Amino acid sequence: MHDFLNLTSALSDETRVKILRFIDSNGELCVCDIEKSFNMIQSRISRHLKILKDAGFLNVERRGRWAYYSIAPSLKGFQAAALKEIASLEIKLPKLQKGCRL
Amino acid sequence: MHDFLNLTSALSDETRVKILRFIDSNGELCVCDIEKSFNMIQSRISRHLKILKDAGFLNVERRGRWAYYSIAPSLKGFQAAALKEIASLEIKLPKLQKGCRL
DNA sequence: TTTATACATCAAGATATATTGATATATAAA
DNA sequence: TTTATATATCAATATATCTTGATGTATAAA
Image 1: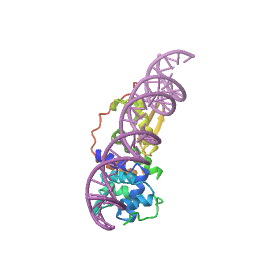
Image 2 (image 1 turned 30 degrees about the horizontal axis):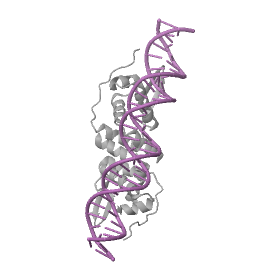
Image 3 (image 1 turned 90 degrees about the vertical axis):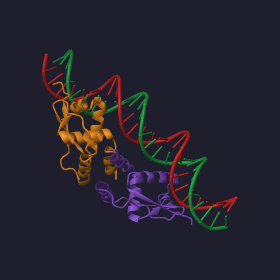
Image 4 (image 1 turned 60 degrees about the vertical axis):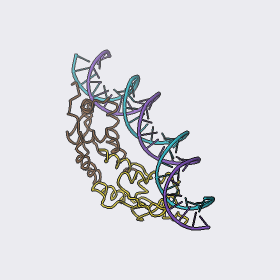
């Protein structure tokens, strides 16, 4: 039950659904790219990414000073179904903008 | 997106997930039965039922002074998947108790 | 070392949601 | 009619969540 509620609460916020779909569409992204693309402050993006990660949707890989977020490999049945459902919503996403200055 | 968020928020509350599963297990129930079974005050149950109904999971049929709630017929793909997922959680449910005094 | 970049986390305030008790409506029995 | 039952909704409060700005940590360039 706990995991299920974690999953549904993660997906009950519009910003998070968009971020998830954005990563799903664009593949691995670092925080600053998402920050720039969505035009939201970094702490806000970071927090939502954490929630999505804790719900099992995202994977982080740290390389140098960057944290790369991607869709977790081998999502479980219902998680995968949720991701598919989101993909079917045809959400208007921002254009990918590279935010890192290096 | 709006419908999707409605769905996920409806399922992001433990009480609601339990009520939904309870109706799924027991079939059509009226508010007072749920109230009695869960030992919660009527306004609380009524409110959660409304949210589940608005999210498309439940159907109400009014007969006399009773409102009978049941799983909506022909749930859409993802809704049905969610219901299945919930069924797979093996949630401990209260025993059905008839609450109506008539 | 010092400084800048990338990211995470915290604390405060704003907003949303849940719970309760009170009240309203509708039905039907007395 | 009057009264009791079943349900819905409202207003107040409690609780949770989101957003922001500030601060902390890690990395690596200067």
